[in-house]
Length: 65
Image (cartoon, rainbow, N blue to C red; front, side, top):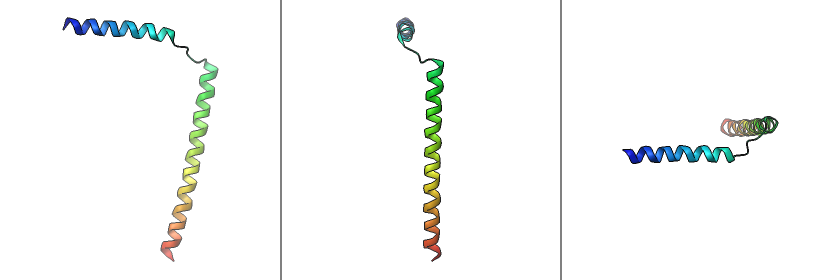
């Protein structure tokens, strides 16, 4: 059991050291990228919604004919 505690402690210490090396984005960058992701997500949702509407309408016309 002692070796498990030692491995866990080593892992946590090394993880903390690695996190200090990370270059974190600024608040401005984070906001910018968040808005880009939301914009692309909305575009894709509208695009697939439009495709669904078109294909549903076409299938409905074919079936009712």
